[in-house]
Image (cartoon, rainbow, N blue to C red; front, side):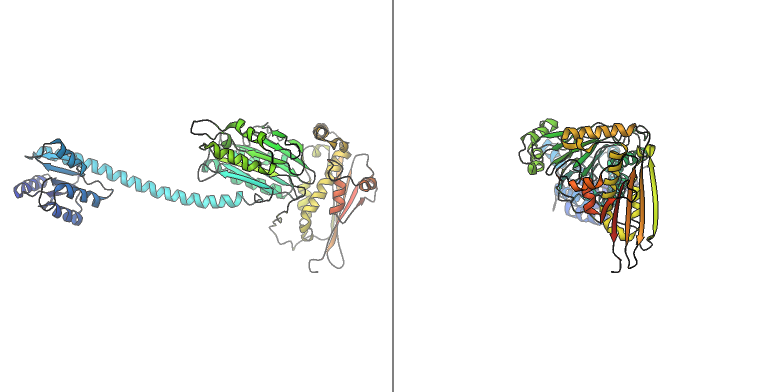
Length: 566
C-alpha cells in the first residue's frame, strides 16, 4: 500500500478547488490549496509537497509560469505536476509539457482516473528518489575510491620512481590510460657505476595492472643496489610475480644492464615490442628482439633468463617502447604500428634528436591511445654518471674491524651463482668502506670476471677486438660455462685495522687456471677505446694497490680508509 502524499492543488475556481481537495482527502492524502500560481509557488516553498495539481489558466500567475518555478525549486527531485485543463488544442497541451507538466487531467474531474494518475506518478517519483539515492551513494563510494587511489598512487610513485630516471642520459615519456599507469619505468645505478633499466607493461591498465608494480620495483631496486646481475634479478622478479599474480595477469618487460666501463649492454626482452639500439657512428639500428615469454608466466624451473650482449660506444642510444605506442590509433582507425616507428629511425640523422622525432611522429599521427603509452631512451656515456649514495639501514657503528675470511666457489656453483653481491654485503658492513662501495664492487667484478673467464674458462679476451668477435666471445663463454665440470675461484678477504685509526682491506683472488703475466698486462696499458684488456688497468686506477699475490698465483688488491674521527 502506497504512503499518503502531500498534494498541492492550484485552482482559481473555488468549487473545483474544494472538489479536488475532497477527492484527494478521501484517497488518504493531505491536500494543500492555492487560488493562483503565485500562492502555489509560495506554498510549495513552505510545505514541499510530493505532487502538484495545477490549473493552466489562473490570475496573478498562470499555471505555466508556476510550474516552471516549482520545477526549479524541486531541483533534482521529481515533483510530478498534473495539469488541470479544459484546453484541447494541441499547441496548448504541448505548452503544458514544455512548462514542466508530467500529465493532464481534463475537466470535469473523474475520481477514479485521478487516483490512477496519482498512483502512477507516485511510483515514478519513488523510482526517481531511488535513482538519486543510488547516485549519491555511488558518488560517495567513488570519492572514497579516488581518495584511496590518490594515496596509493603517491606511495606507488615514491616506490617506483626512487631510482635514477632523472639521470642526464635518460629521457622518457609516460602517458597513463587511467589514474594508475599499467606501464612501469624503473632505472637504478649499480654499485659498479653502470645502470639497470626496466620497462614493464602489465596486463590491462589502471589499478589492476599496476598492482604488481610495487613488488617488482622492490625486487629491482633492492637487488640492483646489492650488486646482483641481470639473471638473478630476472629470476627473482619472475618467481615473485608468478607467486602473487592471478592466472592471466603478467608483465611484458625489457630489462637492460648498461656497463659504461665495459662498454657493453645486456638486454632481456620478454613480450614487449622490439627495442632499438642506434649506433652513434654509423646510424645503424640494431633490433633488440623479444625472445622470451613475459614475467610471471612460467614457473621458476622453466623460466629462461638468457640475454643478448652488445658492444656499445659513447653516444649509442637504446630505445624501448610499450605496445601502447604501436597500438595508438588515428581518426581513420589506423594503428601507428611498427612500420611508422621504423620510419622515424630510418629518417633520423641526429641521434640527440631521435627521442623528440618519435614524440613528434606520435603527435602528428594524432592518435587516440588505446593503452598506457611509455617510451624510454638511454644514451651511452663516455664515463659513469654520478651515482646516488647507497642507503643503509644501520648506523655502521658496530662495524667488524679485524677479521679474515676465505671462500672457494667450485664448478657447480660458478655455473649458477653470482658471489659478488654476497661478498659486497659482507664488506659493506665495515663503515669505513661504505664510501668506496662502488669502486669495491667494480674491482670485485673485474677480478671475478678475469678469474672466471680467463682462468677457469680459458677464454681469450683478444676475441673482443670487434663487434663480431665480441659476440663470439660471449657465445663461447655461455657454452663453456654450461659445460663446466671442474675448476674454482677463491676469494681471500682480510681486514687490517691501523694503529692511528682507519684500516686496510686486502682482496686476493685465485683461480684454477694456468695464470698470466700480471706485470706485463699492466705495463701494456691497453687503450680505453678497446673492447678488451681494460679490466686490470681499471682496477689499478680504483684501488690503492694492485699486484700479484704473495703466493705468485692470482691478484692482490688493497683498499684503504682513514680514521672516521680524523
